[in-house]
Image (cartoon, rainbow, N blue to C red; front, side):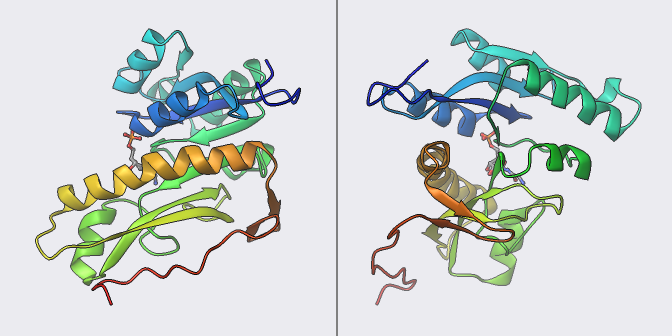
Amino acid sequence: MTNGADTQPRKRVAVLISGRGSNMMSLVEASRALAYPAEIVTVISNRPAAPGLAWARAQGIETVALDHKAYPSRAAFDDALDAAIKATGADIVACAGFMRLMTKELVERWHNRMINIHPTLLPSFKGLDTHARALATGVRIAGCTVHIVRAEMDAGPILGQAAVPVLDADTPDTLARRILTAEHRLYPQVLSLFAAGAYDIHQDTARLKGASTNDAMLFSPPS
Ligand code: GAR
């Protein structure tokens, strides 16, 4: 399928989820625009009961449930996952709340073609329980990051970040909600740029080709 703006074929995207799938939904909604340079061709989950899978199915999107518990090893599961992705003809893999570590082999097969969203300003707060850990340190600004996946967990060239303030009354839940709203804006924007080939990617960094920033600063407390 081509987008409306020109004859470039839209990039085929496989989205990997493990649960709710709200980031996947934001990518699907964004990709409904004719000019969006990517289409979501499949949603794959390692948890068959993931609510996001049922939502995607109801949208008419192909879904695949691959229960990781049914595989004897991480490598066997990753081989099955790789085969399922390849069967869709995907160009890009977008992890969206896919809560499972991948083998180095799988990550390398999708080198510079697999991206992820993480609910912190990386490289701070990799891993789990991020919002409680951020609050415990007293950071005043939090946020989210979309990055290219490398073998090391929650690492890889940063494609985009969005920042939100941390408020004195925040709990992990209120902070998570504020960051999630930012995630839903950031991920579709970054996937669009990534699919359009707008980044120069090096080993550890990615840069938008051409000018990419304005002069705005983020202050908390406000100046
Ligand atoms: C999102 O906040 C995402 O950033 C996070 O899981 C949540 C999934 O929500 N991912 C990670 O922590 C990955 N390290 P969703 O299923 O509603 O998109």
